[in-house]
Image (cartoon, rainbow, N blue to C red; front, side):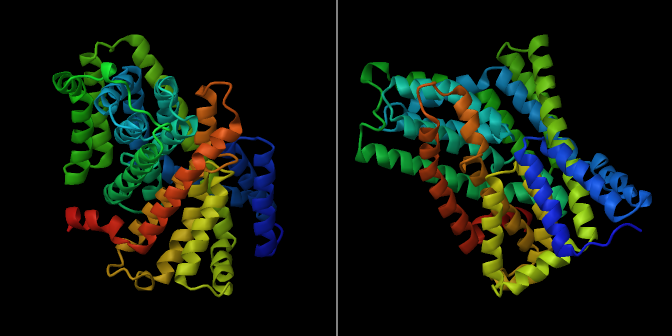
Length: 451
């Protein structure tokens, strides 16, 4: 046998070295996987390394996970076909007459976009390229303009079909469909809060978000024609989500239909050609490979930690704090936010969820005032998704901040991008608290659909 190390020390060494290597800028997938192999060898012997294939194989053969490349491909096809530009154009013209209308249009477009794209980066970058120059040209306050793009962009992590929800469901052994449905109302709630905030601020101080001049507005007949242009992609989204929600097909089958539909939509928009398909395939390959590699690495890392008694150690440590069930839940949410400042979402999910979910289950549904024990994992899952949105906006390493930095005009300083995220970060905290205090926001719709 290998060396015996006390679990408290092991926790410190494992997570300390993980943090140190990540700070050095090494990719998460190989840091977690590599460290896990090193510790496996130190703690055990050559036989212990058998954990590696036995943890990876169930992921490789997991049917649910095949939805990920399909949804990413569907998104990439729609993006390449120029649907997103068209959609922003339509909503922009329909809502431009309102004060703050363009910022609201950006958030609405991002919400619809989130229903097409399960990935965050695409939404923030695309909206940054299309919407930011449009708003700055109309004398919008840069902070409101940037904040609405980043906040809208992060909705992709919550509104189905979210890639993160699929991975959470696989790790927590939860139904993907239920998680998707549970995330709908919180997603729309946050989207509504962002819009209300932007429009309210623009009405209080019209200089922040002026309406577009009368001569640039479009007539009602034109608005109807513009909305007609969007019929194909919106029908696709409705069909894909409708299939999942009505339970006709599994999310994987729906993703397959969506991918096929994306080809048709691209053809209708006369954008179906080899370069489009090739680029979409490359994007899909890169994104899926990144996600899957992180999953492989992190699952071995956590598997080893749990095997060495980490699960019990975390449980005892939380119990020793003397906090009640709510205290523990709030502590978990704070931990997730802090991790969100440094790690990426797949990593956080695979490091925390396998440890947190059993603890939440052990506390029991009654402790949180939930009548149905089955709602517990679902409720925690959606809370987790809402929380992960915050990680994208939280300085210093929030992804959305850097995605936007890449496309924002050079004269806007990074500090302004940070500042523009803060009011929306506060709204996300409010949203998270609402979902914690009123679990019905999450559980009502799945109960309605699944009975």
